[in-house]
Amino acid sequence: MSDISQANLPDNPSGFIIFMPWVTLPRRVRVGRFRFCPLRLSEIATIVDQSIAAVVEKAVKCYVRRNGQPIESCTIVLRVRGPQLWNIPRRQWNSAVDAAKKLALACLAEQRFFEGHFSPHLNATMFRIIGQGVSAGSDQIAPYFPRRGGGLQIGGLRFKDVVFQRPPQIEGTSCEVINERLLKALDKAERLKCSAARAVNSSLETFLLANAEAPDLDSDSCVTLSAIAFERLVEPVNNTAQGLASAFADHWAPFVSLTVGNAKRIKPDAEYAPEQNSWPIHRKWMKELYEARSATVHRGPRSVFSKNWSAWQHLVLAAFAYPLMIKLRLAEAGLYSPNDRELASFEVFDLLLDSSWGKGWRKPPEWSNILSMAEGTRAFHAAITRAMKKQEGKPSGEG
Image 1 (cartoon, one colour):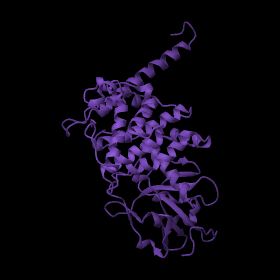
Image 2 (spheres, rainbow, N blue to C red):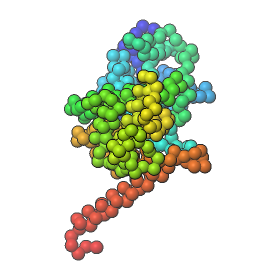
Image 3 (tube, one colour):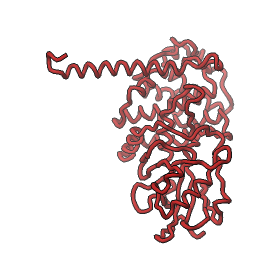
């Protein structure tokens, strides 16, 4: 197969097509120069050129579910402008990867935790893209695999020779909530060359790797990656546990709800208890997250420091707080306005850090109740405020 990723013959179109095969978005979403579009087998001809539709269908059928049956839908990556929107030149691969990472963030940022066994479960692996060269009228496919120092495109394979099976860590393939306001804010931050954009770009890949739930990364490694992601996102002056914790707390300062000294479950470091008792709990958590990273990277944990959270708890907390910190940084730059639900998350983070993590199905974690009550309270007050403003706007004498 001769460079089918670049050929562009009108009578026999060829090109490079990119799928996000393990998730089907609820609608089209634009990220930079790309549009991520849900693709169902029955609707392929409405998404891509009729001349290439049959080949795209064959390519989609190379992707199979856990039971070995072909997937029935996925997400295709399209260019926003130009001829043959489905044909993405290989030179744009890195840009497509970056767009996919931002889309993953916009979805993971809205994930709910501890909502029950049947609630949607997302991870970063769902949003990885796979590219392949295809040619109309041909039974050949040329998959592309990123590698150290570049990538490898393998030609000479036929559709019937290639099978991509859904990774075992992916439970479901739907993502119903996408924060497009966050995507627009990130795009504007990049255009303005805002420091928040630099921090997000520097930290996002590490965060996604920590939340890929890849079987070859254990919990301690993922905690280390999470701490590195926060270090790059927060950009502390001093790259130490104390420095990162202090900088994190500075950003979160408007939303302190509980201090270490008033906590039910959180213990300070014995030697520094008088000082740490006045800390917001989120500052103590960030210090411990970084210390967990240091324990893995260096010589193990230091017994003089208290440890209030296990590795898996750190991972859940980091997955929850990292997108919120991005929203805070964008809000500080005047590029994002948190809604009531997000403000509730900021406000109760200390309470979540001090909450019970439960004991099996008989005693579930307190997390969901705490967050739902805070969201309900904010929604109630917002409704009252809107009603009062509406009433104030009426002429006197009207009921």
